[in-house]
Length: 122
Image (cartoon, rainbow, N blue to C red; front, side):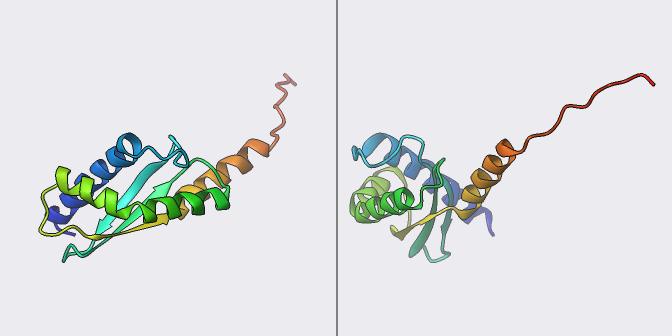
């Protein structure tokens, strides 16, 4: 990937995080929600945004994605004010599966009981 698209991805990610955290007043959006990854296509027509949340409640995650998808117009208007791009891409919000897997592994690790070693001098 070229430096131009890496820079565009990181700038869009920064701006989207700011918009979601500070400018959207929807009570359904959790404050622990964050934008984990942004991938814009080379023609700037589409943008895939991975959203992560520190929960494994699938219904809650789907609800948040739905809220963000319905707010696409507002988010795009705010994005235009913050970023100069050839055109504003169509935003597609998805759940970050990698973060979900990490959360699940951490939960499993917390349930493992490791016996303490006894140090005997024999």
